[in-house]
Structures are given as C-alpha cells and as structure tokens.
Length: 119
Image 1: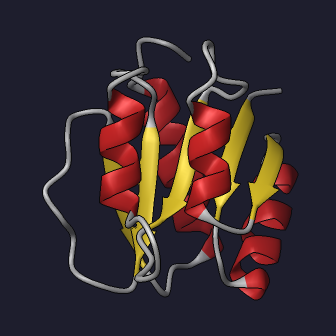
Image 2: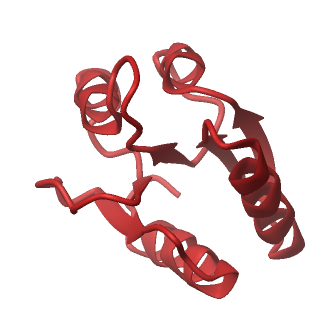
C-alpha cells in the first residue's frame, strides 16, 4: 500500500482527502501544516512515495516548501493543491485546483505515481 504525506490546513478538506485516498488504497499520514510536512520530508529517505501539499497563505507557501524538498529529494512526486492560480512547477509536481472532486484527487495521485521514477 503506497504511503502518502498530506499537508492541509483545512481540517474538513484534510479529513475528506484522507478518507478518499485511504478508500483508494493509499496509506495516509496527514499533517495540519506545511512546516510539519517539510520536517517529515527532509528526512532521508522520506517516509512516503509522494506528498500532497496545500499552497496556503500563512508561513511558508507550498511552492517554498517544494523548493526546500527538491534540495534533498529532487524527484519526489508532489501534488500541490490550491484555490489560487497555478504557479510554475517542475516536472515532478502537479497542480490540483480547489474545490476539487474526490475522483480527481485520486486520479492526480495515481498519475503522479505512474509517471514517477521512485514509486
């Protein structure tokens, strides 16, 4: 069962995403902020095959967290979710706009893993 790290500040979105992804066969570690996600992802090797990060507005943004992660894990698949505009992303990162339907979340994660060299 592939393990994913989910960082989402909104508790309702975090709970829904966790439930949907677990139902799709993933093991989820959910954290409430990007700082906790960054701490977990800076371990070597990371304890997940992919990460799902909320772009957010407080503290480090998702794109700032991704830049720090890339310095240690350049090919870790990452899904960035946001209600805002899609920022420029690298080839190992995909974007999912909010609000999203659960099936689209599952599809994006599956796509990331299918096209990843480390999954």
